[in-house]
Amino acid sequence: MTRGRTKSRGAVERSLASLVDALEYAFYAEELAKEDGLLQKLDPRVKIVAVLPLIVIAALARRLWLIAALFAIAVVLALLSKVPLATLAKRVWLGVLTFTGLISLPALFLTPGQAIYRLPLLGWTVTAPGLRAAVYLITRAETAATFSVLLVLCTPWSSVLKALRVLRLPIVLVVILGMTYRYIFLLLRNAQDMFTSRKSRIVGRLDGPEKRRAAAASAGVLISKTIQLSGDVYLAMRSRGFQGEVFVLDEFQTHWFDWAVLALFISVALVAFWFGR
Amino acid sequence: MHIPDGYLSPSTCALLYGTAIPFWYTAFARVKQLLNTRLIPLLAVAGAFCFVIMMFNVPLPGGTTGHAVGVGAATVVLGPWASMLSVSIALLIQAVFFGDGGITTFGANCFNMAIVGSLVAHFTYRAVAGRTAIASPRRVVAAGLAGYAAINVAALLAACELGIQPLFFKDASGAPLYAPYALHIAIPAMTLGHLTFAGLAELFVAGGVVAYLQRTNPALLGKRSAGSIEAGVPPSGWTTTRPLWIRLALLMLLTPLGILAAGTAWGEWGAKDFADPQMRQQMAAASGRVAPPSKQPRGLARLSSLWSAPFPQYAPPFVRHPAFGYVMSAVFGSGLILGFFLLIGWISEKRTAIESGTSP
Image (cartoon, rainbow over all chains, first blue to last red; front, side):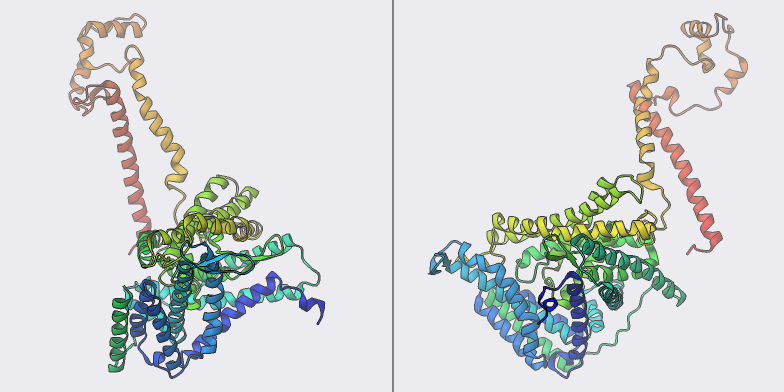
C-alpha cells in the first residue's frame, strides 16, 4: 500500500465524499420509492398522518418495552415495504448507535443511583438509572429515525412535499421546498465540480491556511452562483407568466386500502399512547 | 448541534415550535413585503445553498476538519430574515430527507441555529462592521465573529434545552427519560466543543466568504445587493435618517430656551402690544429709542383678526407650563411638516407607479 493511500483524507476529499453520498442517497431513495411494497402503495398523505404520530409517541413513551415494540413495528414495516434491513442498519441504526451511544456512554456512570456493575480496572460504577437513561435515549433515537427514514425512502420527495399540505403547510412553502430540493442537486453538482477541478489541479500539499482559504473561496463562489441563479430562475418564471400565484397539482386519490391502513396505524398509536403514559 | 429525535421531551419540542412560529411568520412577511414575487426563487435557491454549505468540510488548525452551518455567511449576504428562512428550509430537508436532526426537534433546531443564529450573526456583524467601507478588512473580521458568535450562542441554547431535560422528565425509577445530562454537564460539553472547533469552522467560512466576495463580487455585500432582502427598497428608513431624527428630537427639547431671552423679536409685535406700556417701552428700546405709533396701525389691526392660531405664543390654552407648551408646539409643527412631505411622497410614488404600469 502506498504512503499516499494510508494518509488520512483531506478536507477536499471529505467534502467530495459527503456530496457524492448525498447524491447517492437521493437516487437510492427515488429507486426504493418505486418498489411494490406496503408503504409505497399508500397515499402519501395517509403515510404522513399515520407515521408522524408513531414518531411522537416513541418520543412520549415512558416505558422501555413500548419503545422496543414500536421499533419492532418499524422493522416489520421495513420488511413489508421491501426496504433491505442491511440498508437500514448501515444508513440508520449504526450511525444512530455510534452517535447516541457515545453521547449516552458517560450517563452510565454519571447518573446517580443504585450501582449494578463496577468496571474491573477503572473502578467506575454503572448505575441502574444510568443504564435505563442510556437505553431510553438510544431506543427512542433509533425508533424515531427508522420511522422517519422509512417515510422518506418509500415516498418520492415531490409527493412528500405535496402531502405536507395535509398538515396545513402554506402552498407557497410547499413550492419553495420543492424548488429547494431541485436546486440542491444543481448546487451539489456545482460544488462537486468545483472540488474535483480543484483536486485535479493540486500537485503539492497545501498548508492549513491555504486549505481554509480554498474552502471559503468555494463557499463564496457558491453563494455568488446562488444569487445569480435565483435571479435567473425568477426571470424564467416571470417570462412564463408567473405573477406571484402558485398552484400545485393535487393528483392524490385515496382508496379503501389507504383508509384501512390509516385506521390500523391510528389504533396502534392510540394503544401505544395508552400504555406508554 | 442538530438535536435528533428522542433527546428532547415532546413538551419542550412543542414549546420551541411555538416560539419559532412567530419568527418564521414575521420573517416570511418581511421578506415577502420586500421581495414580493422574487421571494420564491430566492428562498428556494438560498435554502439549497445553505444545505450544500452544511456539507462542506472546513480544515481546522490541528489537522481536523469541521462542518459549518453557514448561518454567518447567509446572514451577511441575505440579511437576517431571509437567512432565518433559508437555514430553516435547509434544516427541514436535512431532517426529513437525510435524517440529520429530528422531526420532533425540528422547531428546537431551527430556533437555535436559524432564528437565534441569524439574529446574533446580524447584530454582531452590524456592531463590529459599523459603517466601514465594503472592502474594509474589518468586515471580514466582523463576519467571522458573527459566524462564531452565532454558532456558540446556538450551541449554548441547545445545551440549555438538553440540560433541563433530566430536571423535569424522569421515569418512575428516577432514570432520565430524555437527554440524561444536567446543565452543569451539558453546557460545558456543548460549549467547549463549539468554542474551540465547531465555532472555528463557522468563523472561517463566514470570514472567508466575505473576504472572497470583497475581491470578486462586492455588490453582494452592499445594502442593495441582489440577494439582500433590502434590495428594491430605497436607501431611506431609520438607518440612514437616524442622525436627523436624533437632532430633531434634541432641537425640540431645546425649544424652551427661547423663554430665557428677554424682550420680543423686532417686528414680531402683536396688535395689542401697541396699547401695553411695558411692551411699548421694549419696542422703543429695540428700535433705537424711536417711539412706536401711539395707536396700533390700522392695517395691522384689520389683518390680525383674519386668522387666530390654535397655539398662540407657542402655548395652547390648556397648557399651563410655557416650557412644555414650547416642546408640544415643536412636536406638533414638525409632525405637520413631516406629514405634508409624506403625503407629497406618497402621491408622487403613486403617480410614478401608474405611469410605469406597475400598479396592480
